[in-house]
Structures are given as C-alpha cells and as structure tokens.
Amino acid sequence: MISADEALRIILDAVPPSRKEKVSLRNAAGRTAAEDIIAAGDIPPFRNSSMDGYAVRSSELKSASPERPVRLTVAGESSAGNPFEGHFRKGSVLRIMTGGKLPGGADAVVPVEIASKSGKHSVLFTGPALPGEFVRLPGEDIPRGQRVIAAGDLLTPYHLGVLAATGHAVARVAVRPRVCLLATGDELVRPDRTPVGGRIRNSSSYALEGLVREAGGKPRFLGIVRDRKKAIRKRVREGLESDVLLITGGVSVGAHDHVREVLGLCGVDILFWRVNIRPGSPLLFGVSGGTLVFGLPGNPVSTGVTFLQFVRPALRKILGRTILFPSQYRALIDVPIAPKEGKRCYLRGIVRQEGDLLRVKTTGSQSSGVMSSMLKANCLIVLPEGTRDLPAGASVNIEFLRDPF
Ligand code: AMP
Ligand code: MG
Image (cartoon, rainbow, N blue to C red; front, side, top):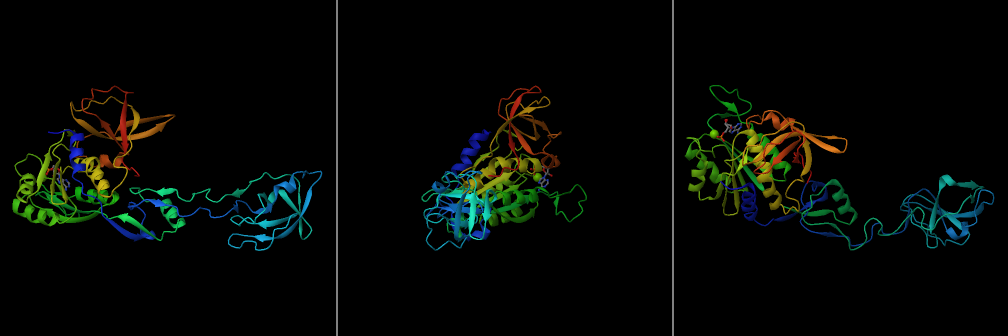
C-alpha cells in the first residue's frame, strides 16, 4: 500500500511528452495551448478615442470656463475605421467616435456630452481638457513583445479573442489523448436494459466518459465485459492501442477480480496496486509502451474520486497543462468529522460562503456506493493521512468539483 503522493509521483513520471496539432480558432476553446504566443505588434496599434466626442489640443482649452467658453472650428471627422486624412490645423477640433484614430497634434478627447455645438462648424468648450484624457495609447492593452498566452494554458473564450487580436486564425494545441474505457462486471447491463437477477446498470462508465471529456481527453467506450479472464484480455489488448486505458471494476481482492492478473498477462508493467486512500484504495496503475493503464474501483464514487485525484492530473500532464491540480481552499466544518484512521480521505461536501468564511458540510452517507452524493456535492473535502477526529468549527481543505483549470 503506497501513499497518495507516492502514487501521483509514479503516475506523473510515466506520462509521455505531449503531441501538437493545429486547429482553427473556432474549434480551439477548451484545448490546451502548445506554444507561447508573443504579440508581434501593439494592441491597439494606434492612438484612438475611448469616447464619442471631439479630438482637441488640450493647450487650446486651458482658459475655457462656463463664463468664458472657447469656440473652435470642426475640421472634419474620425470614426472607427475611417481616420481623418486632412491636416489637423491649430485652432480646430475633429469630431471623433469611439475607436477613431487621433490625428497628429491632438492629445485629448472631450466627450460629446460636455461640449456644446454652436452653429454648423464650431463647438463651444466650457472647460479645460487634461492631456491624454479619453485617449487609448498604442500597446495599452497588449504591448508588442508581450507573452499573452503561455504553452500549457487552457484556452478559454478570451484566449481565443486574444489569439484573433494578435493575428492568429489557427491555434497550435496539444493533441487530445485517446482514452479507452472498459467496464468489467458480471452484474452490469446497459442503461437501456432492465436489470434482473442481481444485476445493475453500468453507470460508472457514463460518469467517467463525461469526466474524460471535461478533462480534455477523447473517450471511447469499449463496452462491458464479464468477469472472465479471456474476455477481459481481448478488450484490454484493444484498449492498449490508445494513450490511456481506464478499466473499472475487478481490481479489488474478490474471487472474481481478474483485472490485475490479466494486465500482467498482457504485458502491462504494473507500477502500483492499492493506495492509502478512502474511497478508492484498490486503485491500480501500470504502463504498456506509451499507454497508461488505470484500474479504477467500480463503485461509482470510488471511480469518480480516483479519476479526479489520479487520472485527471495525468491527462492534464499529457496535454502539457501548466496547472495539474485544482486549487485548495480552507473551509470550516459545520458538524464533527471522524476520518478513517491513517488514510487520506476524500469526502463529498457542500460548501457555501457565509460572510467572509467558507463553510462546508458533508453530503450525508459517505458510502462509496452512493453515487448521488457526487451530484449533491460541489466539492471534495480532503483530509490528509493522520487527521484526527475533527470537532465542528475545525478548518479543512476543500477542492471544488468543477475546477475550471
Ligand atoms: P468491483 O470494483 O468490481 O469490486 O465493484 C465494486 C462495486 O461497484 C460493486 O458493487 C459493483 O457492482 C459496482 N460496480 C462495478 N462497476 C460498476 C459500474 N460500471 N457501474 C456501476 N456500478 C459498478
Ligand atoms: Mg466487479
């Protein structure tokens, strides 16, 4: 039995380097950047107005006041995409729109709301303008040479905006790992069948498929196999063609738990079996060529928790992600918790903000068969090995179940 940290170290050490591909910007959301993006030019590229108003020389409005307004001539217009091409003479102003280019000589914009039009071609200014007011400078958003995206960043919609703004119609991203899922168990039937005679519906595979997709992997379900060595072996062979093989069930010490033996027969190098955690202690991990193989306990909660704690970091590392683990926060427990002595425990929790504090309670029964607890929960409470009984009000570490990175 090894510790959770040791298990993670072994898993992450076994991850092969990520592969890259190009995708169009439209399909890049949720992918992982495979290269740094350096801005080749300033954004915005030129001085422009942040308001609709008048481009002025602030020096010409120094004396302006409501009692002694300054009258200036409107020489023309500059709107977004249609700059003023003429000569911006002294003593004149330009009508300018948001995004319009400032002409040479102008150093401020007076919003239209505080200038009054007087006659057809002149405007009265009743106050001074500060140099630089309502002017956006070149590079104010992104200066040339700045790294705007780092390899390993998860591409969010705003990353796509930045890629477009910096002139990228395609993005270089990490190839999504192919993840095969295999469900083992004599008791399992498809969800569209009515289970009879001690059978149950296969549920873990469906949760797992969604988790794989959320984590950036490309899931492929290989189906359900009975607890027969030959049948498992056939499907494992198929699964070993992928980047990652996730097998659920059959990794514990029951009389019909054959997965470990079969993996050995298929040439999988088993790097560990059983981890000092709860739930999910029968977790198994091995490698075969470049394929990572996980044996996840079949109880739906165990499957989910071991995926989040051990498989997701591996998928993120395959993708070259900078952030492998969710952030942890401190929260106060409402009711006492008695951890399982000596093990690292992951409890399903419901966390909420109360004033300046996060408060968390468990979802109720922590049995690893209670899959609905994963629906109720919005976080995992993570109790380190050796945590003693905790009184109400004690603080614990939590990880949000839906971690955006
Ligand atoms: P095992 O890991 O094979 O010892 O299974 C542990 C428990 O999880 C048993 O109660 C199984 O019936 C259940 N189980 C195994 N695989 C699945 C699955 N794919 N969906 C739902 N329950 C499962
Ligand atoms: Mg089983």
